Image: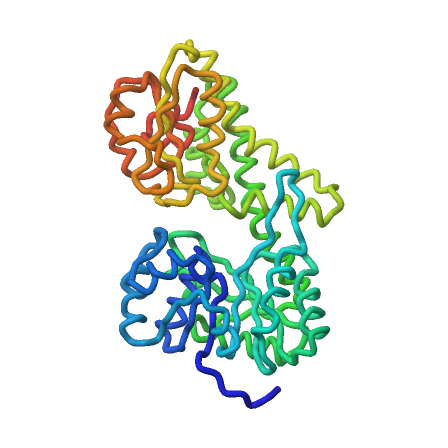
Length: 400
């Protein structure tokens, strides 16, 4: 490697998003000089002003201190990539409308920025990628004549808990050479002492296996919910009873919408990787993605739904979040728009949907309510109207 001098210890490309921004803030809080590069000018402006583009517990105060200390900056300018010793790339692998992943997405994105990279850099792929993408990126840089190290170090945080988990969870680092792994371990070692080394293909699967395992567990819970509910029995009551002081059942989830930008997408990536022979993954998809339709069908059996206004409380993909990406509350809304008289939606955190109404208006106008996202603010809702609460947030049972 060359002895090139750099202006920044690290730049996070795509660094104004849910994965990149917490990482950039965390690294800066540990004394590194960190730059953020993002094509979203509005998000960059917000970050430079000390504000977050999304909800993330405990992050704003740390962001403002990093800015005040001169440890963090943000820009839309790609030139900052070449002025940074480590380049953390937060570009994931999307799934198209046919549920097929695009394994070339990361490579295409980096190819357009090849002239920004320099010899001696460490390039870290951070988002979940299709198996084999790391090898393709290595080949991309080699073909361009660039002498740098490539590592894949998957993010492992849950939205809303990044500022805790970045410092507490073990970090998986992988690279084709020991030098690449050592450099990645040194970078992430400023956050955690617990480093786990894998080969790139092993790390790629480790990330996919993690998200698939969670998705399958949620599907099992939702299938159990359907079984119990079809016989007029409360799944959550059963679950709590069987898990009481019984460690082997302690991890059985409650029922609810298994959604968001990762779990479903990564299950489809693993399905494609196995040439669509991933029966368990496809079954999990059918259960989880089918839950909104199941709930509406059950509501139709119990109520004259076509004449009723339905209020959905919570449009984010999970509780205490403002993120609506792949939210099943919106799938529920689409179904209800066809089968009910009117759909009224509310969420205290979502700011990107102009059609949302105040909670008080939804509670007043709706004839029946559905808990879409289990925000704690809804736990105190008092109403004499029927409530479909698959989460059992109100502690009144889950039967529909």
